[in-house]
Length: 479
Image (cartoon, rainbow, N blue to C red):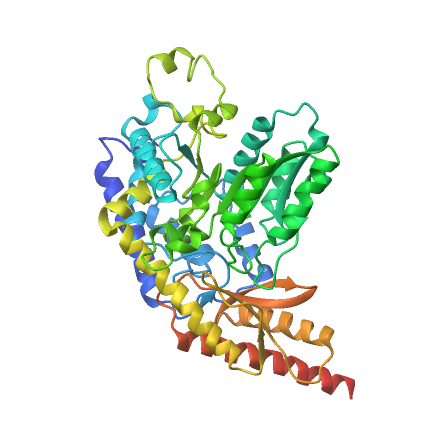
């Protein structure tokens, strides 16, 4: 079995195997005609469950043949222009190349003696991102597995900086459309459900600063501690961006840690036309960025940035076998000193390869394209009486629903749910769903520059067709 170990003796085997795998995927990408096959759980699960993992095939080509049957054929392909659902982007080739390199070398970014140059590359990218944000010369950060982990670590730092010996007195303020990871983080940090104060949003789904000021003052009057304010730069459902300057003023006034969740909106950092939408983010104490959302990177590629590098000490633990304290005085850089993770992939390499190949402007142009596309999509929806669209897009998300005339609202809900499910089952397109004011809506998250207004119009036609068919069948059953 040593023939399967990657080393100097198996380099040619590695080359042939990886090349064959790449060729299979390339052939698949070149020939798929829809983002999904429509396969059901009941159809696919028996195929996978029927594979005897204790009887290996002993041949890479045979394994790839099997993989075609159980994965590649029925995978959801984000690169297809009619995948319009979640915050999943098509990926750029330099990043995929970086993925291949980091997987083969298999560096772990926890300590210098496991990564060397990888440590310095990650640190350089953290500095680059912090500079783009404008956090100042004392900034630092670390790559993470995603926005949820970044938000958790940010709130951990905020809790420790609050210096309160009574967790029950701590309060976190976030808009009612902020990411669910804020509440999840509070629970993981030992804070009760009452610790997260939900702040109302305006018509454009942005945090109402008057309401925030009221809640902060109410907190102070009650003898509670405003631990953190979480502003969102790109909400998951709407792409809305909270008024960052005003929120920063209130956070400073009440002594609260300001965290900006820019997991989605971080693409604006490299936009040549929309960067001003993030004005005020430079005043944050911490910022979440997800390069695997709007920098067109493969999952995972994310980071947490902080204004004051010293606050990262709240995540630091020293183990004699790994990162003993003496290494600090010896100026040996260990990224585990900053991270919630120990063993950690060299995900930073993907962004490094992308920047060194395409440049920041190249990434920004792609993100601007999808934001422009969302504006065109909004125009199509606003002009179509069959649909109700919630807000004009700030980024690349459209929330809408099919609204037939003179139909019960609950029946409209069911028609939209049916249309989404039927569209997914057909495999013709993939869209997401959410709730607005208790009603079911559909959602386009546009992150593919290859998607066109014609694609959007075609998918809207499919949605209307499925909804109309459902309503027609409902009427037939009722008559």
